[in-house]
Length: 435
Image (cartoon, rainbow, N blue to C red; front, side, top):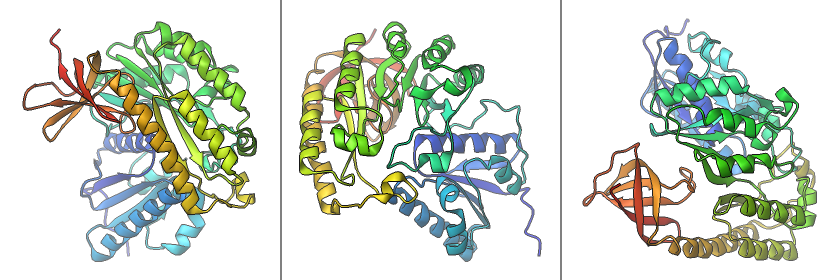
């Protein structure tokens, strides 16, 4: 029996995982809209597309639970069709087809044309940069590359996303121009590895040249860098950050660990001495730059001594922003051959200790901001507060600036000069200063 036509259906795209997935969902939605399909993001719809994450255990569990939730809705008759795409189905498609057969079809990370076809749409090559953004109107993610060539032992990204593939500069400028025309003021550059950008296309690391092209886009006022791998970091980027007002004094550089035996086992291609030297270079070249990093504790073979090295280093480096994760033992990665020998409670305890140190550092750094005035972008209104960010803060992961909405009126999506009057561990409280 033929399934009913997809012509008058509403397609609900559900996004799980990281900002790269957000971007992919937006591209899918842009394609569907261009095919005159009614499409929504995480609202009611009778056709559901779940864009999954398969990075670590928690993310995989969330993805599987979401699939099961919508399959149950399908059985109840609340939705007609369920499609699954993204990293989880790229990585585990045969297993998923066997375990959850009631999903109509599974697609991998590079199957966009096939997914569109299943939804009764055609893939339109001419739609460079056309997306239906799901973030607040003032900022958008700009994915400058796909995949990763790094050999990190713990990471399954290359399995799910393939080899590194840079997007040409002219395509990214065109995309930025279209975003700016729609009111976007802040671009957040993302990739599995920004540091590698351009090596495949231009035979050299070309992030600095890309930034110099993007700063010329009218309407874009902030450009932020996320996920720069430390090994082989192109230091000419630091000059661009320092000299170009539109490029935020901010960088997200995932370091993962600092004890040399762990870095070697992780296959990170660097050492404690080299990493510390690179961070000193950041601070010397761009004084006042906010540095965000992420760390992994509980990696196989992490001794108490390795952990103490990490703890002491975090206290010494005083990162502006830091996230800490417990190690997840992922099949088909190099580290999966090692014994996952740090007990779960020890992993969690170590993560808590790191975050306690960081919480104190963050509180101290925030106290220094009291009385100072910052240019902030206003993202949203929440309860009795307008919520903004300084150039040193990325959405969702960093500090926010809270302004009392009962006393002050601000326009969402605009910039405002905010004087900090109070500060907590991870938030600033401020009031607008009229220019």
